[in-house]
Length: 94
Image 1 (cartoon, rainbow, N blue to C red):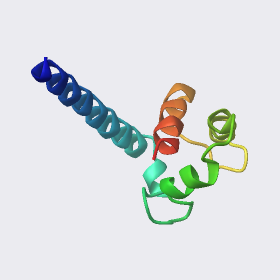
Image 2 (cartoon, rainbow, N blue to C red):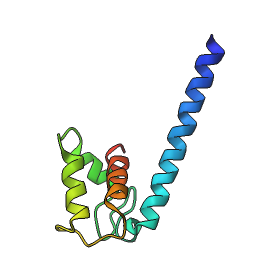
Image 3 (cartoon, helix red, strand yellow):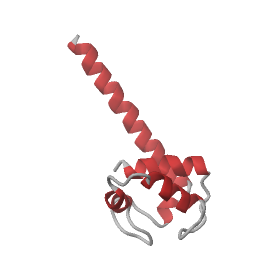
């Protein structure tokens, strides 16, 4: 029984690691990393700063997605709206 639990936890860890890696690659492909970094300010705020600022705010993901996808107070991006949603969820989970 213990082996099954450990195996399940390891599988969950691998899935999460691959998801973070995929989101990191998506951020690179979408051009996000031209202005943002994970933990340091560049032209725009760091992803961790965005996550901290919006922690616990209801509807933050929808508001940020609309801002980015709609190019409202944010430069136009190459990523699709679906990719922007994925990236916003990734950033807010930091």
